[in-house]
Length: 143
Length: 143
DNA sequence: ATTCTTTTTGAGACGATTTATCAATTTCAA
DNA sequence: TTGAAATTGATAAATCGTCTCAAAAAGAAT
Ligand SMILES: [Mn+2]
Ligand SMILES: [Mn+2]
Ligand SMILES: [Zn+2]
Ligand SMILES: [Zn+2]
Image (cartoon, rainbow over all chains, first blue to last red; front, top):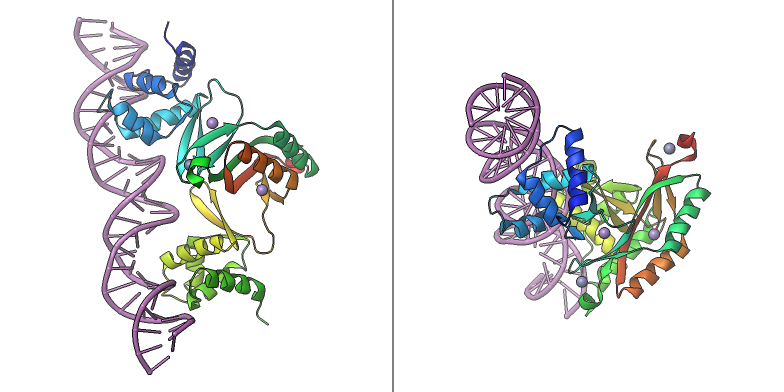
């Protein structure tokens, strides 16, 4: 039984619904992607170059964007970089990002979430999504 | 009495502390910047071309980044463009954004800010900046 | 299995935005 | 007034992601 059977299933279902084809590249990229928490297109490009030196960067971008449409990934724009977040196993979370080394830490804080709801209510809004990113120096980079 | 005496004061103080010089361009750009709520470097470039056709785009970028370091501005990355937000009169704030009509409401919440610090500390981070955006429907668009 | 249409791929061109380079100019303190 | 240090403007270059297009692959229909 393959490691990522369920996600592969989800991808194939999405492909079927949109007249898209199941390719060797899409299978390869999905497999690598699901092993990550977050990854950039560039990182994935270098990582997969070992398995398939001819895999193009444009294909990586196209495929990661496809995963977003299929609900398997979520693009997060951190500063200048776009990280593709693996949403297959995880619920909602926010991020701490080191501005020096790029380290990313995920966190979830119910109190903050609750206060966000309060702010929204007070202003007559109903929240659909939100985005919270804390940028700073990690313990290693502070020294 | 000049319109933006206080902010000019703040800039000059920052310059003094960092061995930077007070130039005609910096004065010109600050004056234009403080009339805006937010602006992109490109917008400012075109706007100031009337007053000084030789003002370089690189100088605009450098100067707006300087304002960020001096605490007068804050860079916000929206989509592909970077908006420089005038924080001189408003101080720090976050945003509620209506996904239907585009309405933007500014808010500030000390409790959220404090909890953000706690999260950062717990993870060994020192926050430099953060970004909090709540997306949803405003009262009018919900009906 | 073969054909045939559609989709995908890979390489590189391209566009948009921001930063780096560097000689000439300006600032400002001595 | 002088001169070291910072700044400027023009433009090259880096960055990031998308677009283009001919060749290849997928997969449905024969
Ligand atoms: Mn994440
Ligand atoms: Mn805030
Ligand atoms: Zn770090
Ligand atoms: Zn609205």
